[in-house]
Image (cartoon, rainbow, N blue to C red; front, side, top):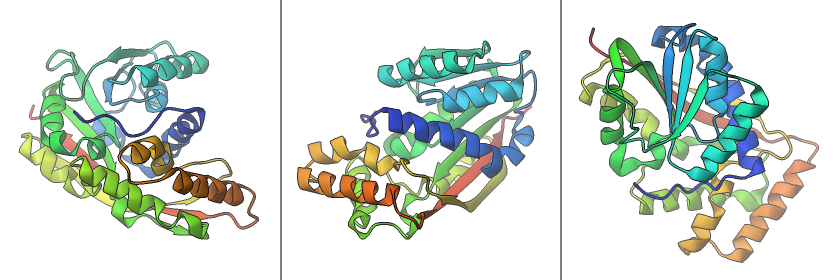
Length: 265
């Protein structure tokens, strides 16, 4: 599997925490349909710094359990700190690949994967096939992903105009197509699951000062592959700083797709 492009940092962890909390509003209405209910055993595959794992721990309650699986050691270390700070006792973090989690077959009620598949384009189907096998009969796979080609920004600094296109090119070179959200239903069907939901919407976000997008977290990777220069990174950084103090806050329009696949009973 390709190296993950987004470097873990304090700003990136803050973004994960914000995304997790906002998920209550963007896709929380579908949680019960996916079996995310008190007492459930949930695998959060590709959990990153465990922001979603902590949120799900509150959903499944003390009778339930969340197993966060992450391949990146730096993200796991950050995740342990996030779990400790939250004071939750029903989250276990372990190292594993999305195609080989190490979890027994049929051992969980729900697998959750948020914004994982877009970073693993060549392995999309292998990942969904694998995680589907982790779910007990009658359980569910809950997928959330993006169409990054359709992201829009209002009142953004013009010096950021090329940042997202550069980020998309980085993923194209790695074999990723960040329109993954459009394919979620097909991926579930090909894994042998029944698609009970596949829908998309725009999340409208007033961008708070200090928030940075995934493309910014990938700047080192874009530098390493010759897609950006140090001057580009400096230009983008100065643009973000101007936006942080701008009186008119930028608005992001972020396309997000949710899909639920049911494992045959």
